[in-house]
Length: 218
Ligand code: ATP
Image (cartoon, rainbow, N blue to C red; front, side):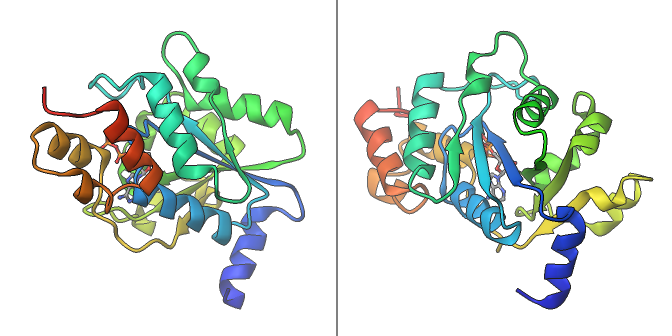
């Protein structure tokens, strides 16, 4: 890691506090870019733990998700072999809308000495000001953003956050065009075969999708 990068991390890392990452997603299904983003966060932020949190029915996504049990099982298959990963199912047990701020507050209460890092793709960050209690999120966590095709994080975006500019970090991740929507759609229309799926999602996830016939043409 370059000296400039390491000193930047020290600045955002606030000394020797335990570092806990939080990476939420529908994971319907978890795919290769999710895995790459988790790995980039673990390495570049020197995290002690990374909580992977499948979301409940997110308030800002209109489409119905696959059953929670399938998304959780696939999330385990995709991430659990990685070091320092905790697959955290707390949002799946929450009734009603699920908000990131509630999860961050719970994690901070469980780990009072830790610094939290919230990991997301640039598409999610573009709408961050519409998130429930985003100012409180910024107080609790450093927001770590990775570029996503057609949605590159622009440092000028941070200028809008007067007084919070030191709460952002750009993760280095090569552009990966894969999305869960694309995977579901190509499976549902029969465009993607099981073999092609194996290039987009981790192998155990591809097997799980085939076994349970998720996203199959109806
Ligand atoms: P969908 O297409 O259903 O919206 P998705 O592929 O965006 O799904 P999510 O589970 O909603 O997957 O994403 C979880 C997190 O991973 C989000 O912060 C999202 O920005 C990020 N992410 C997903 N795909 C990529 C990608 N290809 N590159 C960078 N970040 C990504």
